[in-house]
Amino acid sequence: MYYMNGGIYASKLSTPRHLEEMENPAAIVTEAKIRADGDIAVGSDIKSNERTLESRRSTAGFVYAALGGTPGTLRTDIEPTWKFIKANIDKAIAVGEVGLNYHKKVRAGADKTCQKRALAGLLKIAKEKK
View 1: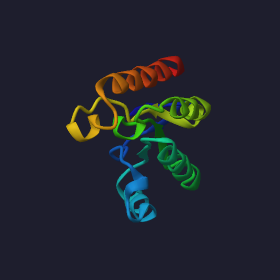
View 2: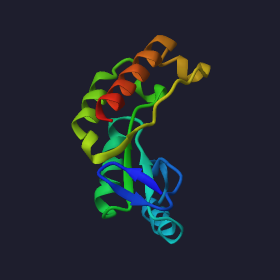
View 3: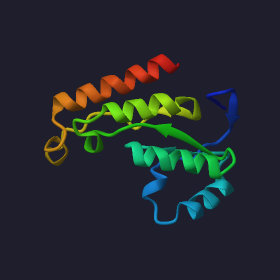
View 4: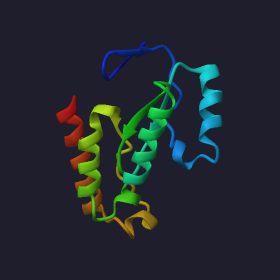
């Protein structure tokens, strides 16, 4: 059993995934309903977080939202993402995707300092929500 925000319990959840990146997210959700009690959609920036929340709304409680920001998408302008997550945190079960990615392609747009600042901000939001 899993404890979910708001006291929701499920016995099996699909692996967290970026539904907004899938070619046919509705088909993915339909297939997941055969094998699981719920699905976790993960956001990585404001646009994907919005789509994650829309998946949550449109599936009547099957898809749960995890709101976040990845180093590769945050760049240096992370405050709008934090603001969006804070404004919508009650609709989410988790803050994620979060983390550090030091691959040189990612570091070209978000250096280590920026990534650490972004991670610290997202962890702070999660801690405040718990």
